[in-house]
Image 1 (tube, rainbow, N blue to C red):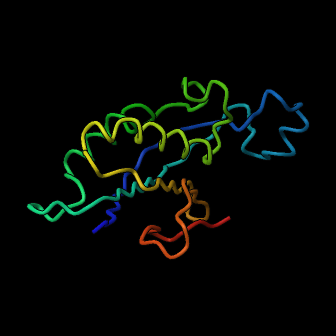
Image 2 (cartoon, helix red, strand yellow; image 1 turned 90 degrees about the horizontal axis):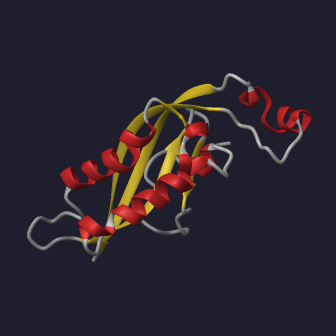
Length: 153
């Protein structure tokens, strides 16, 4: 039986939405106030959903302490209180929350199997503001994934 477990985390980071492929005018038109040369910050709420079979002994999808350690090592310690624009993961990416979400998903997916056997990262959802959230990958309709409020534009 496959089950899903969601856990929330928080970190603070700043960024400036700016593409080197756009002119100054195009950047302002595309990103608006988020193109401020001084950047701006968010308190990001991350929801990590792990899926896998329930362990017959513990009844859990994964060890919560180990999941917390993985997220802390791969995400919180790397990005908390930093400027995303200056991070190597965003060297060729605009640090939109959509791209941040994909970066976090890739980092956790790469690190997670080493510690958790058959459990896997099912999805990562990042809430940028109370009105904006992004999820990757998007769960298929009718699955047990999709904890939380869902995405809003």
